[in-house]
Length: 197
Image 1 (tube, rainbow, N blue to C red):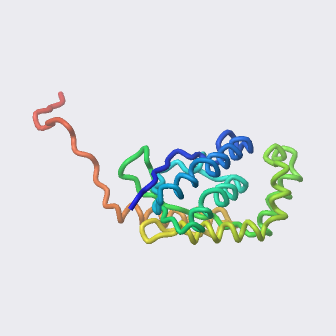
Image 2: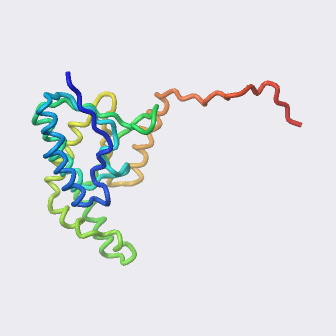
């Protein structure tokens, strides 16, 4: 079995720069996928940092990554293994999908439109992306289905109500931490002879 290893792709780099995404596309078209085919590689090991941001992923960067990388691997029947935390060890990944309804999104956008102090948060893409709601729901469903596993499942959290959202996330985190059976680290030096005056 031949394996290709890739890391630090950083989809969405430079503030979701189209030029960077186009460069990635050229790399996958001209180098990565031809190399897989030419060498009969059937397994890809992704070592981490697939996306540039840790807290969220821009819709456009997600769609481009799906089209130029993940879909092509799936269509070529190439097995993909993804490791999280290539810069850390001993981490427990907990994945949450904060599910906001279309109506709640409308209300939040309207609130920002109506409040001059919140208008700075708005981007033209907020309104263009809203027109693509069904497409994004399908893309999310695909992403969640293809990245869910017994070892690292997705927790889909209803997020229209922020207090309810926070309680649900808190419950999952408490359960996860309790299951990890964490213990404080032991001292690296002998404390038995220490006496304080």
